[in-house]
Image (cartoon, rainbow, N blue to C red):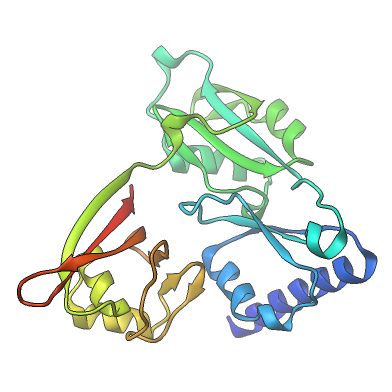
Length: 252
Protein backbone atom coordinates (compact mmCIF):
# COMPACT_ATOMS: atom_id res chain seq x y z
CA UNK A 1 0.00 0.00 0.00
CA UNK A 2 2.78 2.47 0.89
CA UNK A 3 4.60 1.64 -2.34
CA UNK A 4 1.40 2.35 -4.27
CA UNK A 5 0.97 5.70 -2.52
CA UNK A 6 4.59 6.58 -3.27
CA UNK A 7 4.15 5.75 -6.95
CA UNK A 8 0.94 7.78 -7.09
CA UNK A 9 2.69 10.76 -5.50
CA UNK A 10 5.50 10.53 -8.07
CA UNK A 11 2.89 10.67 -10.80
CA UNK A 12 1.26 13.77 -9.29
CA UNK A 13 4.65 15.47 -9.01
CA UNK A 14 5.38 14.59 -12.63
CA UNK A 15 2.08 16.08 -13.83
CA UNK A 16 2.52 19.27 -11.81
CA UNK A 17 6.11 19.53 -13.06
CA UNK A 18 5.05 19.22 -16.70
CA UNK A 19 2.22 21.71 -16.28
CA UNK A 20 4.56 24.22 -14.64
CA UNK A 21 7.48 23.83 -17.03
CA UNK A 22 5.52 23.38 -20.26
CA UNK A 23 2.78 25.94 -19.43
CA UNK A 24 0.15 23.36 -20.33
CA UNK A 25 -2.73 21.78 -18.46
CA UNK A 26 -2.47 18.12 -17.52
CA UNK A 27 -5.08 15.89 -15.94
CA UNK A 28 -5.14 12.88 -13.63
CA UNK A 29 -7.42 9.86 -13.78
CA UNK A 30 -10.51 9.93 -11.58
CA UNK A 31 -9.03 9.59 -8.09
CA UNK A 32 -10.67 7.82 -5.17
CA UNK A 33 -11.08 9.62 -1.85
CA UNK A 34 -7.94 7.90 -0.54
CA UNK A 35 -5.90 8.90 -3.59
CA UNK A 36 -7.13 12.48 -3.46
CA UNK A 37 -6.26 12.68 0.21
CA UNK A 38 -2.75 11.36 -0.55
CA UNK A 39 -2.32 14.15 -3.12
CA UNK A 40 -3.63 16.89 -0.84
CA UNK A 41 -1.52 15.72 2.11
CA UNK A 42 1.59 16.21 -0.06
CA UNK A 43 0.45 19.29 -1.94
CA UNK A 44 3.50 21.28 -0.78
CA UNK A 45 5.73 18.79 -2.63
CA UNK A 46 4.12 19.56 -6.00
CA UNK A 47 5.37 22.12 -8.48
CA UNK A 48 3.41 25.39 -8.21
CA UNK A 49 1.20 24.72 -11.23
CA UNK A 50 -2.04 25.06 -9.27
CA UNK A 51 -4.79 22.48 -8.85
CA UNK A 52 -8.38 22.24 -10.04
CA UNK A 53 -10.95 19.54 -9.31
CA UNK A 54 -13.88 18.04 -11.20
CA UNK A 55 -16.64 17.41 -10.35
CA UNK A 56 -16.80 20.19 -7.73
CA UNK A 57 -19.85 18.81 -5.94
CA UNK A 58 -18.95 17.82 -2.40
CA UNK A 59 -20.87 14.54 -2.55
CA UNK A 60 -18.64 13.11 -5.31
CA UNK A 61 -16.08 10.49 -4.28
CA UNK A 62 -14.22 10.07 -7.60
CA UNK A 63 -12.58 13.30 -8.70
CA UNK A 64 -10.33 14.27 -11.61
CA UNK A 65 -7.52 16.70 -10.84
CA UNK A 66 -6.35 19.35 -13.27
CA UNK A 67 -2.76 20.58 -12.98
CA UNK A 68 -2.61 24.17 -14.22
CA UNK A 69 -4.87 27.14 -13.51
CA UNK A 70 -5.52 30.51 -15.09
CA UNK A 71 -3.51 32.11 -12.27
CA UNK A 72 -0.41 30.01 -12.96
CA UNK A 73 -0.63 29.46 -16.73
CA UNK A 74 -2.67 32.41 -17.93
CA UNK A 75 -5.43 30.14 -19.25
CA UNK A 76 -7.47 27.09 -18.26
CA UNK A 77 -8.22 24.08 -20.38
CA UNK A 78 -11.56 22.32 -19.99
CA UNK A 79 -11.50 18.97 -18.23
CA UNK A 80 -11.41 16.17 -20.85
CA UNK A 81 -14.70 14.61 -19.79
CA UNK A 82 -18.20 13.91 -21.05
CA UNK A 83 -21.37 13.28 -19.07
CA UNK A 84 -23.09 10.04 -20.10
CA UNK A 85 -26.77 9.30 -19.53
CA UNK A 86 -27.79 5.62 -19.66
CA UNK A 87 -31.37 4.38 -19.76
CA UNK A 88 -33.29 1.26 -20.81
CA UNK A 89 -34.61 1.07 -24.35
CA UNK A 90 -37.95 -0.17 -23.02
CA UNK A 91 -38.30 0.99 -19.38
CA UNK A 92 -41.55 -0.93 -18.90
CA UNK A 93 -39.78 -4.25 -19.47
CA UNK A 94 -36.42 -3.41 -17.90
CA UNK A 95 -34.94 -5.30 -14.98
CA UNK A 96 -34.45 -3.46 -11.71
CA UNK A 97 -30.99 -2.18 -12.67
CA UNK A 98 -28.71 -1.10 -9.83
CA UNK A 99 -25.28 0.51 -9.45
CA UNK A 100 -23.47 -2.84 -9.68
CA UNK A 101 -25.23 -3.67 -12.95
CA UNK A 102 -24.13 -0.49 -14.73
CA UNK A 103 -20.61 -0.66 -13.28
CA UNK A 104 -20.30 -4.31 -14.26
CA UNK A 105 -21.40 -3.55 -17.81
CA UNK A 106 -18.74 -0.85 -18.09
CA UNK A 107 -16.02 -3.09 -16.65
CA UNK A 108 -17.01 -5.81 -19.14
CA UNK A 109 -16.04 -3.41 -21.91
CA UNK A 110 -12.51 -3.35 -20.51
CA UNK A 111 -12.85 0.15 -19.06
CA UNK A 112 -10.66 0.89 -16.04
CA UNK A 113 -12.46 2.10 -12.93
CA UNK A 114 -10.28 5.21 -12.80
CA UNK A 115 -11.58 6.33 -16.22
CA UNK A 116 -15.07 7.05 -14.89
CA UNK A 117 -16.51 9.07 -12.03
CA UNK A 118 -19.18 8.13 -9.49
CA UNK A 119 -22.20 6.42 -11.00
CA UNK A 120 -25.51 7.92 -9.94
CA UNK A 121 -28.41 5.50 -10.35
CA UNK A 122 -32.14 6.25 -10.04
CA UNK A 123 -35.17 4.40 -11.45
CA UNK A 124 -33.14 1.98 -13.62
CA UNK A 125 -31.22 4.90 -15.15
CA UNK A 126 -27.65 6.07 -14.62
CA UNK A 127 -25.42 9.09 -15.21
CA UNK A 128 -21.64 9.33 -14.90
CA UNK A 129 -18.67 11.32 -16.17
CA UNK A 130 -16.02 9.58 -18.23
CA UNK A 131 -12.82 10.49 -20.03
CA UNK A 132 -13.95 11.90 -23.37
CA UNK A 133 -11.62 9.55 -25.25
CA UNK A 134 -13.99 6.74 -24.20
CA UNK A 135 -17.29 8.44 -24.99
CA UNK A 136 -17.77 7.13 -28.54
CA UNK A 137 -16.90 3.58 -27.50
CA UNK A 138 -19.30 3.67 -24.54
CA UNK A 139 -22.15 5.06 -26.66
CA UNK A 140 -21.55 2.43 -29.35
CA UNK A 141 -20.77 -0.65 -27.25
CA UNK A 142 -22.57 -0.22 -23.94
CA UNK A 143 -25.83 -1.76 -25.17
CA UNK A 144 -26.85 -4.06 -22.31
CA UNK A 145 -26.86 -4.16 -18.51
CA UNK A 146 -27.64 -7.65 -17.24
CA UNK A 147 -30.26 -8.75 -19.80
CA UNK A 148 -31.73 -5.29 -20.37
CA UNK A 149 -31.02 -3.40 -23.63
CA UNK A 150 -29.84 0.13 -22.82
CA UNK A 151 -29.10 3.36 -24.65
CA UNK A 152 -26.29 5.84 -23.91
CA UNK A 153 -26.06 9.51 -24.83
CA UNK A 154 -24.03 12.57 -23.93
CA UNK A 155 -25.87 15.24 -21.92
CA UNK A 156 -24.83 18.66 -20.63
CA UNK A 157 -25.69 18.51 -16.91
CA UNK A 158 -26.79 16.02 -14.26
CA UNK A 159 -30.60 15.92 -13.96
CA UNK A 160 -31.86 16.92 -10.52
CA UNK A 161 -33.26 13.47 -9.73
CA UNK A 162 -29.76 11.95 -9.75
CA UNK A 163 -28.34 14.37 -7.18
CA UNK A 164 -28.11 13.05 -3.61
CA UNK A 165 -30.69 14.26 -1.11
CA UNK A 166 -29.57 16.41 1.78
CA UNK A 167 -30.93 15.21 5.11
CA UNK A 168 -30.67 17.94 7.77
CA UNK A 169 -29.69 17.03 11.31
CA UNK A 170 -29.19 18.76 14.65
CA UNK A 171 -27.73 17.72 17.99
CA UNK A 172 -25.85 19.08 20.99
CA UNK A 173 -22.17 18.45 21.73
CA UNK A 174 -19.78 19.40 24.49
CA UNK A 175 -17.27 20.90 22.03
CA UNK A 176 -16.54 21.27 18.32
CA UNK A 177 -13.98 18.48 18.43
CA UNK A 178 -14.01 16.17 15.44
CA UNK A 179 -14.67 13.01 17.47
CA UNK A 180 -17.57 14.62 19.27
CA UNK A 181 -19.22 15.84 16.08
CA UNK A 182 -18.90 12.70 13.97
CA UNK A 183 -20.20 10.59 16.84
CA UNK A 184 -23.45 12.56 16.67
CA UNK A 185 -23.73 12.83 12.88
CA UNK A 186 -22.97 9.18 12.13
CA UNK A 187 -24.41 7.71 15.35
CA UNK A 188 -21.14 6.31 16.68
CA UNK A 189 -19.92 6.03 20.24
CA UNK A 190 -17.36 8.67 21.16
CA UNK A 191 -14.72 5.96 21.58
CA UNK A 192 -15.54 4.38 18.21
CA UNK A 193 -15.36 7.81 16.55
CA UNK A 194 -11.95 8.41 18.11
CA UNK A 195 -10.62 5.04 16.90
CA UNK A 196 -11.85 5.66 13.36
CA UNK A 197 -10.11 9.02 13.27
CA UNK A 198 -6.84 7.60 14.57
CA UNK A 199 -6.98 4.75 12.04
CA UNK A 200 -7.28 7.30 9.19
CA UNK A 201 -10.75 6.43 7.97
CA UNK A 202 -12.08 9.98 8.45
CA UNK A 203 -11.54 12.81 5.99
CA UNK A 204 -12.17 16.54 6.27
CA UNK A 205 -12.38 18.35 2.92
CA UNK A 206 -10.64 15.44 1.22
CA UNK A 207 -7.78 15.14 3.71
CA UNK A 208 -7.39 12.32 6.21
CA UNK A 209 -7.46 13.51 9.81
CA UNK A 210 -5.84 11.60 12.66
CA UNK A 211 -6.38 14.12 15.47
CA UNK A 212 -9.68 13.56 17.35
CA UNK A 213 -9.41 17.03 18.93
CA UNK A 214 -9.36 18.91 15.62
CA UNK A 215 -11.99 21.66 15.46
CA UNK A 216 -14.38 21.91 12.54
CA UNK A 217 -15.35 25.00 10.57
CA UNK A 218 -18.62 25.93 8.90
CA UNK A 219 -18.84 24.29 5.47
CA UNK A 220 -16.36 21.49 6.19
CA UNK A 221 -17.15 18.23 4.42
CA UNK A 222 -16.80 15.17 6.67
CA UNK A 223 -16.41 11.67 5.25
CA UNK A 224 -16.33 8.52 7.41
CA UNK A 225 -15.47 5.36 5.52
CA UNK A 226 -18.42 2.99 5.51
CA UNK A 227 -20.81 5.55 7.01
CA UNK A 228 -21.15 8.29 4.43
CA UNK A 229 -20.53 11.98 4.02
CA UNK A 230 -21.94 15.16 5.55
CA UNK A 231 -21.50 18.92 5.43
CA UNK A 232 -21.03 20.60 8.81
CA UNK A 233 -23.14 23.76 9.03
CA UNK A 234 -21.75 25.05 12.31
CA UNK A 235 -22.92 25.85 15.80
CA UNK A 236 -26.01 27.95 16.46
CA UNK A 237 -26.08 28.64 20.18
CA UNK A 238 -25.89 26.87 23.52
CA UNK A 239 -28.24 24.99 25.80
CA UNK A 240 -28.85 26.10 29.38
CA UNK A 241 -26.24 23.54 30.43
CA UNK A 242 -23.61 25.05 28.13
CA UNK A 243 -23.69 22.40 25.39
CA UNK A 244 -23.25 23.59 21.82
CA UNK A 245 -26.07 23.19 19.33
CA UNK A 246 -24.81 21.99 15.94
CA UNK A 247 -26.40 21.30 12.58
CA UNK A 248 -25.39 19.46 9.43
CA UNK A 249 -26.60 18.06 6.12
CA UNK A 250 -26.10 14.35 5.52
CA UNK A 251 -25.78 13.20 1.91
CA UNK A 252 -28.16 10.35 1.09
